[in-house]
Length: 122
Image 1 (cartoon, rainbow, N blue to C red):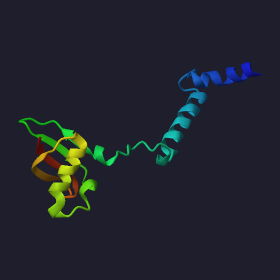
Image 2: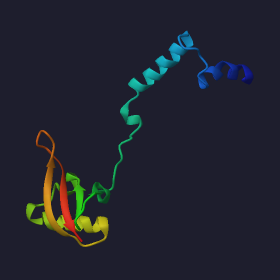
Image 3: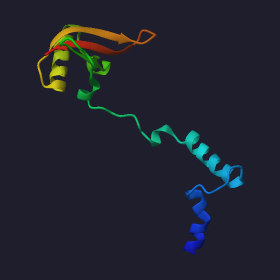
Image 4: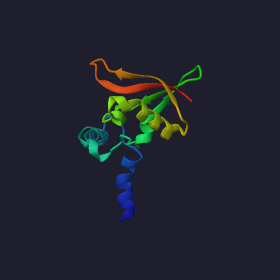
């Protein structure tokens, strides 16, 4: 019984069907159905980073460091507290006290803010 089951399923597991056969077409159809009809939520492949990891250090030179800061981190911060908040975030990320040199919003083609480029020296 097990041997006959294995004999029936073996070509599907090892892709033993000849191209153009009806079995081959069925297997390709099942793969396409899986690809196009599987809900996105089944995989949840988007990383959910902790707040401290939403700050990415970019390559830089000249003794200064450039960081990409996610706008979610500073959305609710008052403009007069922005610099202090950014310094605290960078200290949490790097473990060092930073002197901020500049903060520039990075915008997409439609003018929406995608993040902030923060230049700092330690």
